Length: 388
Image (tube, rainbow, N blue to C red; front, side):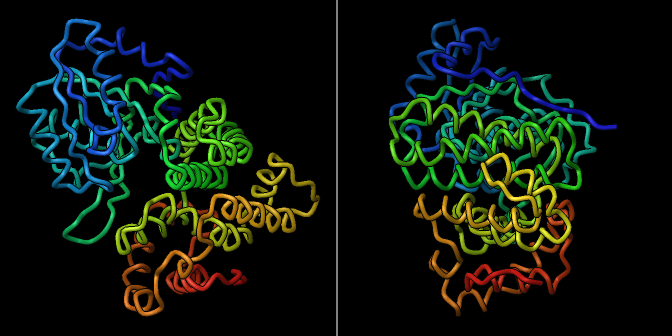
């Protein structure tokens, strides 16, 4: 038995107006310094002010937020006592808000002790609205959060609970119009990988499959347009919708080895998450194709690849993803991304260790052993084909 979990999703132009209808008299808006300075925050605050409310803003969320940073958000919430949390920003802001929400409502808990089986009893104090300003992570639709354990120099990729799904996801395309080209590329590749991994996951299901395939199809069509012409509102809206669809897909199935390696790369080399999983994705598809070629060939067909052989179709899919990455001016290997041979060799053992203990790796269609992971990282660094 399985469950499909989703927030209420409001999308399209003027979707921000939904904030008027969301109950809450004391509102804590959680964002980061970059979003705060771009002028978009004012739109959210002004919309909230159309109803009688008391509003406070916390705008110090870090990229790849740490436990310590989340605790600061929670302390702000404990002082202010909001009955509504509004997470406004990229995946980091939304994930930080999820973590702070737990600590605010359950100060007796430690985040690293929370599992999918932990009963949190959220929503006794506050509810959560997510308003993404990137088109990639899908955190506005998921029941997980990725936080960084600075002490252990690693990402915590198993902070999950179905109670963490936001009450509302508001997808206003105005907020992704200002997304820089590099961020457009990286977050879009993150969404693409989420959808692909959701479709081949060992926990895949009929409901996640449909969202995953349509998300891939939309990203191949509209991500290059959004990158080439940042003011293309239709392309922005479609990539934004596709990103949330990919979040719904993997949240109700699971991601795989590209995310396991991507989390490790982000923790050790502080690479943007979308860049890390974007580089990993083609190599992981090659590695996993031994056990999932039929599934990958389904994905190939929805992006226009006409090849009856599942293995050949999978190879053509990999080449199509690489062409997309070249279009987006994204490195195809870790070496191209600036990771030197010496830095790579110095850190490969910890990369392997973190990848090997990631829960994402065990949901991959082909579960790697330690030697597989080592070979995979070597291929990813040097840009070599995966043939083991």
